[in-house]
Length: 241
Image (cartoon, rainbow, N blue to C red; front, side, top):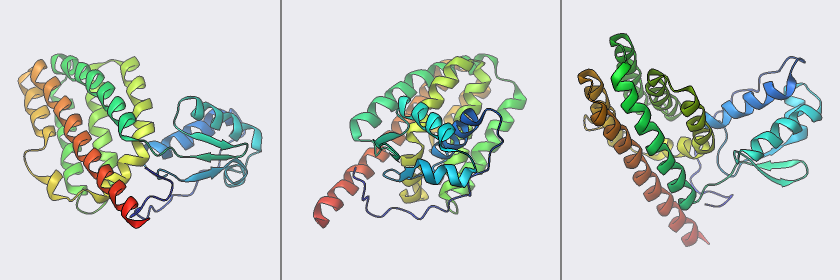
């Protein structure tokens, strides 16, 4: 993937929230990290420390500290002293991240099936319904509801360390996943064969292995469609040069 990604969707950027003076670096870190996870930045977008400081109403120093922290987590790339880029992940990196997600989220789903409450299942089902409804009208909303489904499932497992580890992967994938949801035809998500339905069915039965397999199939399916889309866009870029 290159900086000048073809067919990039128009992302309506929410204004950066001004932060309080106490613990500025951590607050700025969380603000930018949240925007990355939510897909409010696209792969290849460039951020400038001076611009961020001005929009946040802070000095440059806490912004730089937050940026360095995100760069160390590979959520951002430093391209110059004051210029930062949202990484455009390649197929190998996507494959590695998705493999780690399958293993960790699969383990969480197995644990969740053994301890999830009926109330949590009902809430998880409602989140999935909201996801399905959103795909036809709002890619950004659909991406957020899909993420909510996965994190609610992990929360039900009661494994906070695992969830925090997986969250770092979602931060890295967020910009690309938003672009992916913007181009994926709704019919590929909205039908009753979506793996989320099998996750919910396994949870209702207390089927730990079934829940683990279903969420891993969900991640694997998403990876396959995502990589096919990336390859198609790569071919379009080459043809356009």
